[in-house]
Length: 324
Image (cartoon, rainbow, N blue to C red; front, side):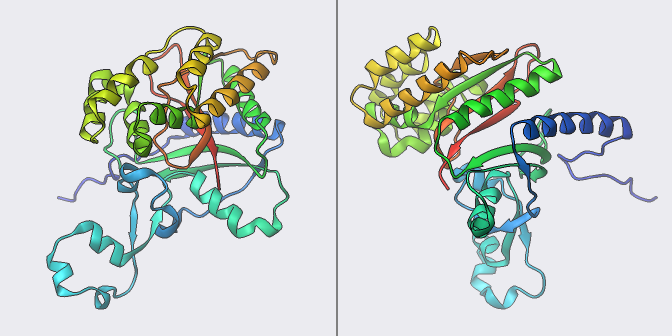
């Protein structure tokens, strides 16, 4: 009896009805991107692993789909290496390429390669699939699309203001009520500095980014497992649980981060963005959320996350400022 056909776990087929819905979503997002002057590019599905590795933190690197080299790659591998059963070490020997994990790192590579042909500031968008070797579960797939927009060649905070406008416009057109959360990587660096763990900034951000998924107690356990002291974890608690309006949080942060130059710079940037947005008729709520951390290493300034208010689902938009 012939085996029943199937597809890899974490992937999907799309019916004509589903494609019609997806095309409506993509076309709406394209229209908004064009409205704000963004131009479309595309990059290959695969990138050199040298481009991808080290950009997503230790956990992200483990989720890269690596592509086996074609041809006979064994001559470059010793018998001892083969018998070691060291998967990571062997993969580095016979895998030079990988499927893209996101669209941001390929865009950074694109800018570096084509900078002589680009007019800056360059506003680009991409709508393409990405792949992650994650554990498939409800609402979490190994292959999925990202709708990405970035500005490069300008350090004006008005770019972040405009990106929030784009998020607000898109979800308003869809009729979806959302909360647009904002934080700043500089604030997080300042917090790590104030609690005495500046060299642990990556471990701290990776852990607190999971707060809404695993809870405060488990976040604290993860921080302890990364050899962050009990004293530092205790100092972190009131900061993570800071409440009040956006203005009240900013004022409290100015006191908390008084001894951190980079932390105060992050507060200043958030204050400017929120002040500008307050006069632009944004239809969805904007929240300064200090637990928004984004564990990815390449963010250097403002970071954003969008969550739907009327359905229990994870974030539906994420992003931030990075340095290429």
